[in-house]
Image (cartoon, rainbow, N blue to C red; front, side, top):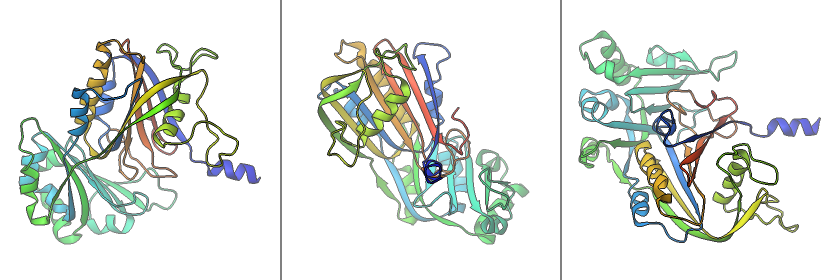
Length: 363
């Protein structure tokens, strides 16, 4: 019974693995990146590499800026000026900061103009807005989801609908949150958001970038055509994802008998590379910036390389109310929603997508 109890306590997840080629007309790589909105960390692993190319390093160092605003009233995100300046022009992202999705009220703004509110029962009833019970509610509903289409709202500022939402946020139940904000529009002034929220002490921030090299790294042997692996010849996608997690966590992978922290070791078959480059970017990272990184990694093999594959891994914010698109997300036991690309020299790629066991299956 004790063993069964421990098994139930182990965080579980849903993992989807697929194989494609960047040149295929029906390749989903761009869509999957663009619809995973709230990204906390991006990690690159490049075997047999001691230094990043100039082009790739420039992209890594230009993944910002994003912005932090403390105690921002929620009604500021539904004003005519904000919607016309940021939501209708380019892609605008926002996410409440230091809120726990399972316990607190949380808010997210998506680039399609949808404002998603995850509210506790009391707050939901006090707002007077129409929503639906959270899919993670049990018999006793304690969480509600409200979705507000800002594009539709702004089309008629004299409508009863806009008046009701504005009254709710301004008078009936004024809500304030700490927000992370980001805006992408080609050619736009980056200072526009700083100016718009200047009355609220907005701060510009840049992602944290950590660059490093690992010597004598034992790596799994991969074959692009063997997604599930082949005994004695190649490792599969699931084994690779476990190994990447250990590498990015800087875990010891030698499975020494006196190591009481980790007994994990590289899956077999494997090979030792002389050096591997690790890059980790942490902040509020836009899908548009991730897509540029992915495109640059696609061209990494334009010139001959010793390695036959590289990886790009992306982790979403654990307390975001959505994972992909408008799919509801909950923390559960781990809060994970992430994806990983393995890019091969022949332009094949593996895509691995994972969420918690209670979330909807990745797209």
